[in-house]
Image 1 (cartoon, rainbow, N blue to C red):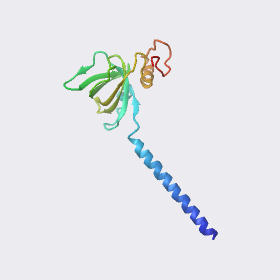
Image 2: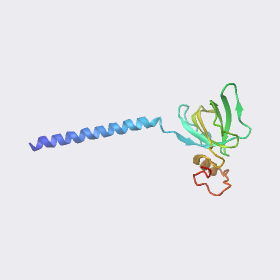
Image 3: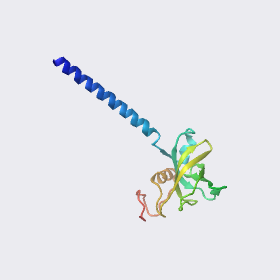
Image 4: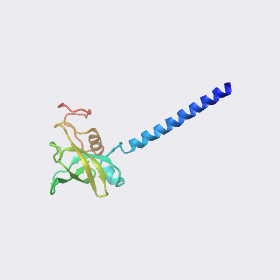
Length: 156
């Protein structure tokens, strides 16, 4: 009688372990496409990502680089002070999108141009995404007029 209970316990433990491993694998597979890494222009130039990898790029829109094409196509350059990456975006830009301002874009890089599917811009005059500030600080370009960056905007 004891050996039958012992066998059942071992079977239940094994089934639970297999179910746990399968669920962890499925969760990992589901997150594979949902995780978008942030890269600065210098990181992209140093180690270009694959053409199908979706990631975020951030930096300052280079002054004088904003060109509106036919229809909704927009081209501009993003820089972190160390490197420049050309960006192409088809769509309507956020109202606060301007040259020489911080931005974050999501999309893919084909080796020459970052093809953005989404563009985010600052939401007030004091805010810049933390990743962009960190990348600009690494390049020695970012100067905060009000002191050290604390991760929050002062206007909202």
